[in-house]
Image (tube, rainbow, N blue to C red):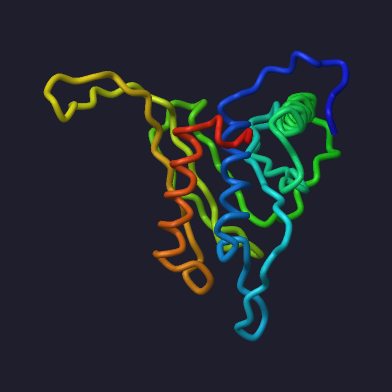
Amino acid sequence: MLNKDRKDLPLSVNDFIILAAALCMKRVAAANAAWGDAGSIRQYHYCDVNVNAIDANGKVKAPVIRGLQGLGLKEIAAQTSSISRSTQSQKSDLDEAPGTFSIINVGAYGVKSIAPIVRPGQSVALGVGALRQVVVPQSQGGAKISTIATVTLSCDHRVVDGAIGATWLQNFESLIKNPMTMLL
């Protein structure tokens, strides 16, 4: 749902992270699943993400953005902006039902990394740390300054093993390093 009053709605790093994660859930479909009753695995054909948000009282909320498989950056930005406004105004209309995966971004708090806990009904949770600048040595000598963030993918290994998790992270890294590929 695009906020028509804000055609100039700014895109945040978090919006790109959400889009990249949703694309990875589509590309690595085995991660878009959950452990079910009697040892079954439920495969989702849609992507709904719970994102962390802090309300005006300092309480953590985990509202869900539904239907990410059909949203672009502008729609994601509108949704995250709406969530931010709702949490700060203490509205209780946030949908906090479980999505198909979670993103916990602690970058705004200057935290370097986080290992999130996988919610029931999900098999993966992505933890995102603060952006920071580091000196990176170059192969021909010298160094350059790069902006990096630590991301951690927690997995329910009954559903997502290390190989699937690693494939998911490879796809995520590729998309984040080349954000234009998310728009094509």
